[in-house]
Image 1 (spheres, rainbow, N blue to C red):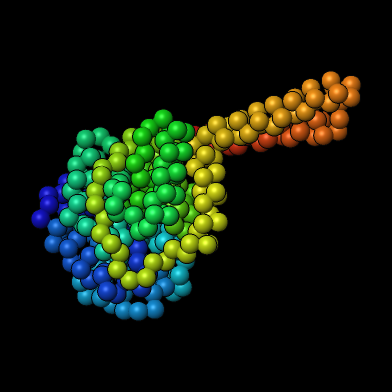
Image 2 (tube, rainbow, N blue to C red):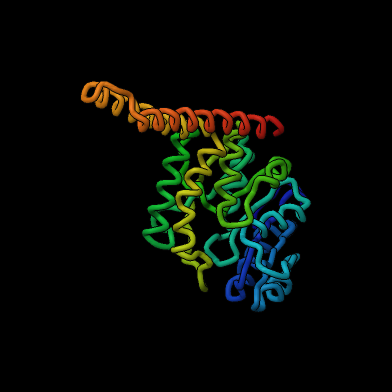
Length: 289
């Protein structure tokens, strides 16, 4: 059993979908570790007995009549929660509630969010490990902070700060990316604590083709959530250099400026302006936080 700051301070939010095989043990373990905590299981349109088992294990269950997405379940749980600290973990058995104490200790040190970062052996497959590695590297370069696991759903956070950004969170699986970059962009300290993750039980809700298409979208989302100009400016510079090189070639070979050069120069200006406008919109968004 772990000590906690206050009997009403901690709310544990567990988004689930068809996790009847594991949710009972997850809730029971969380209840044993934090007997006074508020435990909220959000059943995202399950067609099995997930909700019933979670309720029997001692959780408060909130049900979505249809599946709205992992991020939507997280938002529902956060809105329902009354604790000053929110803890998020999956209901599929990957995250051990007994490791929450390590993350909660980081909040006591002054961090506003602590993320349970998976080690290299805790990813579902090599494809997921490779994709997450790219996300982490891009986010690290943009933010200037070493990010060990941008997409981990195992985290604790100050409730009042999390709820400031709840309107920004998507309904899908990229909610961890959004909230992490939002905290970093706003100057709230975030730390990453390496924890192990067990193999999930049951069927994964990730679809390789569908989520593979989202790969590039998430990369650009990472950039636009933090500093759009850091992405758009190099692209604009590349267009400009291409246009200048082609103009130099046509000038020395044909003595003229071609329409293609003008088109590429125009693209450079347009991309730069889009980045500049995006940067201003991002600044205005976070100025409210």
